[in-house]
Length: 164
Image (cartoon, rainbow, N blue to C red; front, top):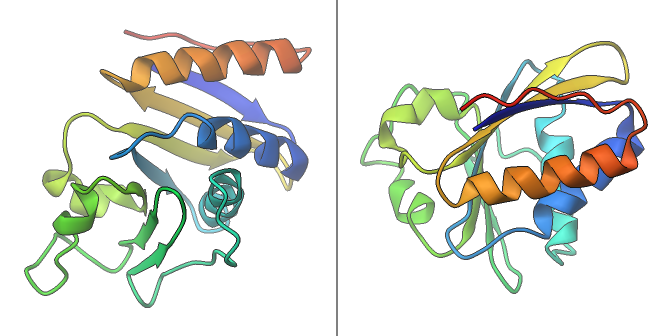
């Protein structure tokens, strides 16, 4: 399933992340892609807060991964510097765990990821607006439907594209 939405500003991104964060389950996998400054880490900060994580969430660019403890732990990865998972990183242990996992620059390790995942590709439209392309299969399809219903009820100019 595929959908596109426009995030109009930072508050809208916060609301969007909160909505997604309310849908997590053990083993939830969210993959993020987008240019530098597109809002991947900003989304993750708000997403983590919606999961009840009080820690300051920031980019794990240099550490590759940070784990934030909560009712469900959040494994936040930034794999920008990786060209594939090596044994030195042991990321698969975290990706395939019961924790919630958010991976920035996921395409760098795509071969190591399960087929069933949610993907957000964030595109910069202007200083404030972002186009978020949402894709998911299996158990993530229902979450995409919920996000779509919420988005259209809250956004006066709702337009989206469904692709199966």
